Length: 303
Image (cartoon, rainbow, N blue to C red; front, side):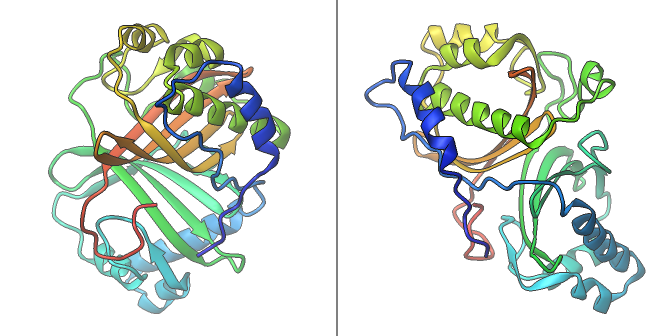
C-alpha cells in the first residue's frame, strides 16, 4: 500500500482561516491530514492499463487480465475479497439485469485523474434499482492497477432541485476551464477549509457564506439549490454534528473530489463529496454516502 502523502504547506493558511471564525468547544477534530496527489502525468498510462484489463475480461483472456494488476492487489470495496482474481470472477459472472453506465462528462474519457489515481463516476444497477457510485483507483509506479475503493448509494425517485444526481450543469460543461496546478491547489485548500469550518467546526452557515456561490447547483436529491436551505437548517439548529476525517482530496481543473470517513452519533459512513469550483467559489456539488458495514470480506477497511 502506498504511503500517505501529507502536504505541510496546506496547514498554515488553513489554520489561519479557521481561527478567524469561532469554533464550538465540543466540535470535532480539525483535519488537514489527507492524501493529496499532485499532477496529471499518469492519466494516459493508467487509463491504458484499465482498458487492457477490461478488454481482456470481455474476451475471456485470463492471463492478460491478471497481468494488468499488481500483486498484491488491495481491495477496499465492501463487496469483494482481496486480490485481483475475485474481480475476474465477478466480471465473468455478472447477475442478470446488471448494468453500468460511466458518467462521460467527468474529465477526459470519463475519468478524473490526479497523480497515480483515477476516479470514475457511474450509474450501476444490480437488478434492484439504480445506484450512483464512485470508484477510486490507484496505479503503482510501474503502471499496474494496485488498489481500489468504491462507494455507492441508491438513487432517489426524484430530487428536490429537479436535477439529476449524476448530471452536470451545461453552463459549466459547455464552458470548460483549464486550470493550472496552482489554481487546483488553491481549490483543494479552499474545500479543506470549508469542510473543517462547516462540519468539524459546526459553522455551516459561515462556511457557505464564505466559500459557496449563493445559487450553487445541488445534485444531492434531498437539498434544494443554493446556500439558503442548509443555512436555514443550520441557523435553526437542525443539522446534526458530523465529524469529517478526510482521507483523500483530488483536484483537476475545476473539480475537487473528497473522500471522508464521516461519523454521526455512532454511525460511520464512507462519503464522497465532489465540488465544482469557479473563481474561488463552490458552484456545483455531488455526493455519495454509504454506511460502513461491520463485516467485510477482507481486512483492509473502506478507507
